Length: 267
Image 1 (cartoon, helix red, strand yellow):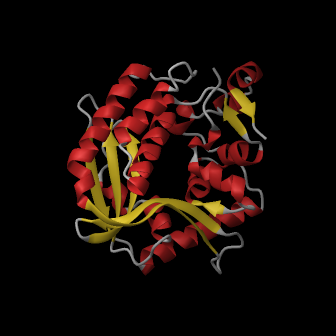
Image 2: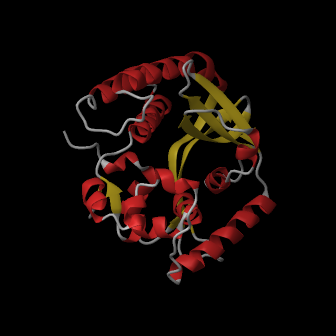
Image 3: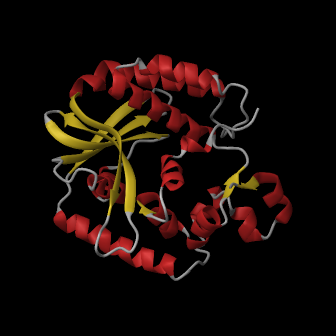
């Protein structure tokens, strides 16, 4: 069977509906490697076989979004959705399988319903799309905030993550992604990562932080610098540890056979 829809990537869904734009994902990809940015956004190369971990995370997001929008049981949503992927070719790492990820997803969502959902009240928006015109930037800044709601009594912008390990506190305090998504509702008192951790014993961890005008200005200054580099076509390889798990490594190595085998250009 063919791979699941590319709309698993919410930022890519935004790209389908907007003229040229800036987003957290675009800026972060450029910071990781400008050549990776070029291959992804300009050449529009994608892996022929998608990562099971990324597809799993997208399905968890969809199940949670349905829960917050309409009260649908996320466990049932996930099980039905994941069952439809049983015969789909996905790339699983050494510790993954379709069965293991199904079991992990069910356990995480059951735990979320029991222990975490009661903390969330007065939901204001779910997967809220935003588009901002900022004087410093030539292009609109767009994004999708997973959830804006009262968490433990405070208005909070929440981003849900699935991960093989928990996040460190400093990752949340310094998170550009949370700063970017705070733009969706700058009146929020807190920003938070809710991490669904895919360990042997699945667990859910919350990390809270605050944002202010100073942090926002600092982030927008970074976005301005990167956007100017993108506008002037400053693309170059930035080698590092990330190369070992980059889908585009065969391109940089000049391995044409591997490129043909693993990558496809989308329209």
